[in-house]
Image 1 (tube, rainbow over the protein chains, first blue to last red):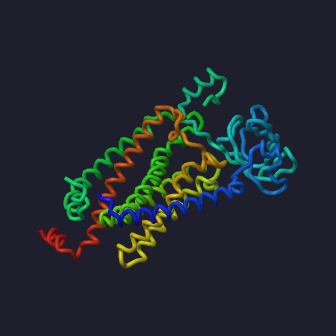
Image 2 (image 1 turned 45 degrees about the vertical axis):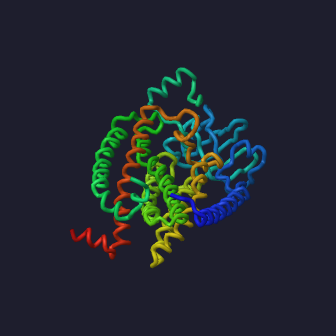
Image 3 (image 1 turned 60 degrees about the horizontal axis):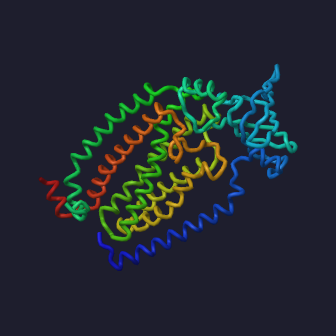
Length: 149
Length: 242
């Protein structure tokens, strides 16, 4: 295919058009990126970046040995953590199948104070690791946990 | 054989009949083995058990939904710059195929999401941007059918396809740029894939199968597109009356 003068002109027009559109959307995304947070992390909450007493989502890993269940109701409490901080969570309802200590969760609810969250809905966040059970057992024996990515 | 010959509508129409039939049959056989490999041979997951197997449809469909879109935009670009008829037809015929792939990715994702996450749908960045992709495909199809002059229509839809190209990196990187419920990439990253090789191989195989399927269906659709555009031309009448 030959590139004639007409082809060149058309190409330039399309490139300019595309450049305009993509910079427009890049700016738009940049401007809204603060408001496009799907969930807050415990570190952000401790740093008081999340509003208290309004509906938000938070996400993190369920802390091992922090899960407590009441005997006569569905009420549960547990802690979630990220790299630096942890938050107490209260929840009254059915947990998803994949919910377990050491697994990720994303929850909707309200912060009642700086480090306590009351959840209305708990969703399990799956990570990107896939392996057969035997391999998982082997890695557990070797490393103590699966977090060696 | 040079490009202008393949780009010739008559040449394409009269020479790809057997190819598309062969590829169609080939897809069927390949798909059968892929399903067997993914659903029976591959081991179950340590955490999700058997439900992860839906990824053998979900992931290739999602990859193809992006790939087909890029293909549609690139052929659209070529048709805008060089006015090659066959590129116009290829570009617009990509749209319905890509829309189906997007729909498959969304529906299988929802079916997987319910047992895994605990919900069918959330408005996180990955799911929302993939839904926008579906609307882009539908937009291209609707815009095309709104014009009676189809060569004019392709000019507009190609531009729309190029505009929508902005969405492609957003879909791909959404899981890294923002906190999303959808997990990060297991395969399409520079480090080692976070998936055991016995699960990864059938996935890559299914990706190949979906590609063969795409080519088979695209050729068939392009033949139809050529027929619709050229049904009144001399060569088509001669060819069909033979």
